[in-house]
Length: 534
Image 1 (cartoon, rainbow, N blue to C red):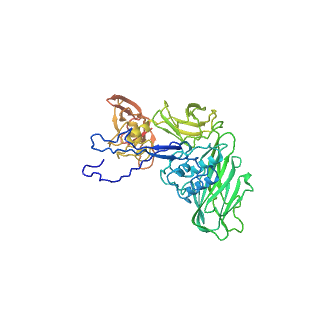
Image 2: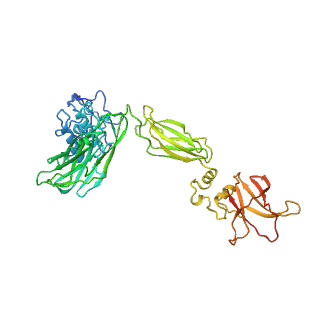
Image 3: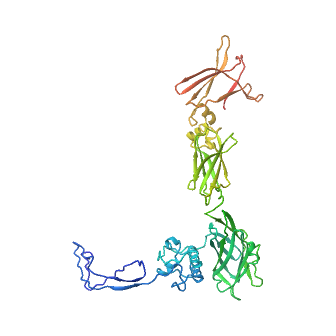
């Protein structure tokens, strides 16, 4: 319908595009008619045209198999090396991205569980290789037929190193199931005027087996020279050279797809793929190849058996920290392939360890409750495998808050005891350090003129004794002592002065304390006293 002031002109034509999803191959009909659904808009003044067109026949072809994209995105009924090569070239930008339709749908086949994700990248190359090798059962093309966005570039992925003439990128999968194969893409970007490119690879032959290498991109017309003399020892070298007179142009991209198999066995092991100028010679004599310097370029691969694994890795790291006067929080980074964690505890002074908890794989934190204030504890955190076997453990230490730690959190919102929260700091400038403020229960942010009062009093008949009086507020610990000195000019030092209690009484929120110096006062004899926090 159109607005009343803009009616449809006689004979005007209007195009409506209908997008339909074909669920299966075959022949169907698309019919336009007033039945079974009338097009009249009730009360809208719309005129219902009498349509008697019987419809049209629509043939829907077979979608083909996932990964079958060569030649020319139409496929040939078989997923093989040609399909892998075409997908690699698309990912590298050497071939255009498939337009929306069956070609895109066949190439976008990863994740396998969803038939694609709307993005064509190296994951699709790996999936097509699995279809071609038979590792994944054939499947009719399905999933997205439209791009969700541009395919991501390999630029910036993995480890990047610059050599004199080339830039190299490569990445290996983090985890590989034993017995399965995986691909490591090595992308070489030439800076121009290079006749050949060569590199060396080293790996643990007891963990990984090298299967093959495929080279695509600007070197597809070149000569591929592998050096696999010591492949059984985990050393190989590869050199790609162009025909005589040809050179790699600036920005030319070559992909060397290295394929490995994780060896069968039991347990989890971490191995390393390393690219280096040595130990394998990579220079092809007389061919003018440039050696790519990759002495520090490597990637870790975890090989595991999720059915009968041995002890898994321990957590990479963890933290134990006191969070109250009776609690310590223990946390750790999850360990790969772990099915659970075992936490042991040893309190300071104990010689043996006790199991604190056994937790599932989804847990990575525990709160240890009911501890004494200021006590130090040690924790061992280990991971478990499906058989209940235990890995080596990481050791963590922490202690619960002491009374002064708790006071710091209340007064300074921190427990670390630095800056204004330090024991000897005096944020209110009254000359009373924080630790003494804590022992007396006074306010570290409020100025106090005097914390104790000296006097001469007749405690016993006939004698006058020096006394000191002070107040302990808010149930503070009150652990203080006194030191004395008779000469402040430097001729003597402060010594602890034992005082005898005289009065200790409670009034309101304060506890009043009076202490007596044991010596009788002497005429014209000066004594200096100072209070210390214990």
